[in-house]
Length: 573
Image 1 (cartoon, helix red, strand yellow):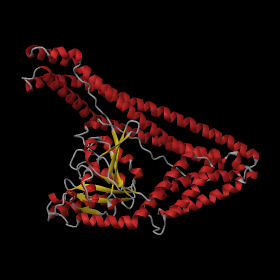
Image 2: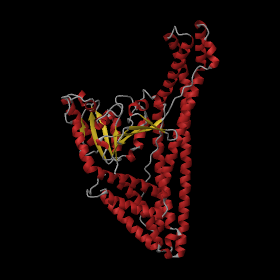
Image 3: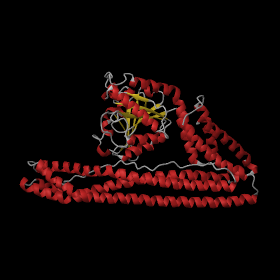
Image 4: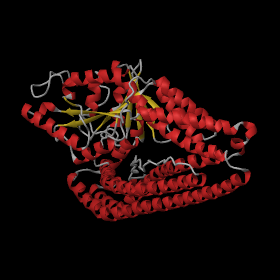
């Protein structure tokens, strides 16, 4: 989607949003009104959401640090999964941690970020971090850029990809970070194929060029160009560089173009100065066009009703009421079926958890023998402390390994479910539009549901202490007596220990799946409800009362909407 009218200004599009907002408020369509308000705020602020995208370990954090000319993000660490980090301009450096529980927020030192966003310091996201917000006085950000560090897509953690994809509707341009080892994977190719239809502008970074020879680099760049061409990305902008070398202040090697990062910075500078506004306008204009089409459909019916006599109008109202009642019934059936399918997925998770506990109990028991062999001299409380730490880690490993596979399995089920129910919702919407269009003999503006179902997973582990006061006396016994007793007791309690933590995992999936389903269900309903509410308003007495000048107003509204649709369509050609 490319803006062809380079002279268009945000003020011009703002005026169109004001027109739609006035119409939406007059027709009391709250869903459209709130969307229009958010679009106005986005356009008025002239903020550009620039996302850094790519697989894990491609060097996204190093690139961000190089652009900011500062070590803002910890680089070279294994990141915590499913955490979005936003960096925007601020006079004073600051970092805010947003937690998953109740939206709690905590300000922390930027130097301590690794404690929250690295897997080493926050394993399994025990701290329940949802996102991180950073302000930093970087000239790169001063013109309204919001830089977003996204989770690595296509990793063993499926929810990394879903978190990134669910964020794409907020992204105006993207930097796809690839590297020479290898230049592009099948997962990345598929991600880019989907990405090009979601993000208005893409730049491609070929990172880590310092590890390739000049000949290898030339071959890699050509290979990458051919692959991007195969993905229907015409004239892709590829920038070979070494972000880590620049961040560390070292001179680029002879292996890569010495102007790599500088060339990319210059291109971004041109993009931000000359194209930023157009990309932002393009993004907002697309949403504006869809809203205008929705309102135009209702206005067409309102205009048509002005030509009907009282008997015809009553007949149409009764028929429309039947159509809307049927639509509401179909929508409720969709919701019921969706909840049933959701319950089926959760039941599958519970079954898989039970199998995991059953399979892994003997494994954990066998590890107890390894522990005994590794600590032959440990006695008393020291023995108890070592055993407790070891058990906690072993139990965490059991569920962490399981979760990697289960996340992938669940997301595949959710993808299939999403596609199925989006098709159902579009079918309901299509029938509603066609029936209403045929009833009032007007052309139909086809609207589509485009939401997706993604399970945000912030799975945490909280392994309870193994020893309690009741067990303390055991640790005081002589070692030759204590060690066999304690190990036998622990072996016996392994299923209970695993089941206790399986309960926490089960609750986490329940909570996240329910939240995801609720959002998905609301998205499915919203498009249908907007059309249904628009139709009801079109046939309301006020809209058709000659004394209230409703008919003349409807004609004026239709003309205004036609103008907005023409202008936005031309803008997005």
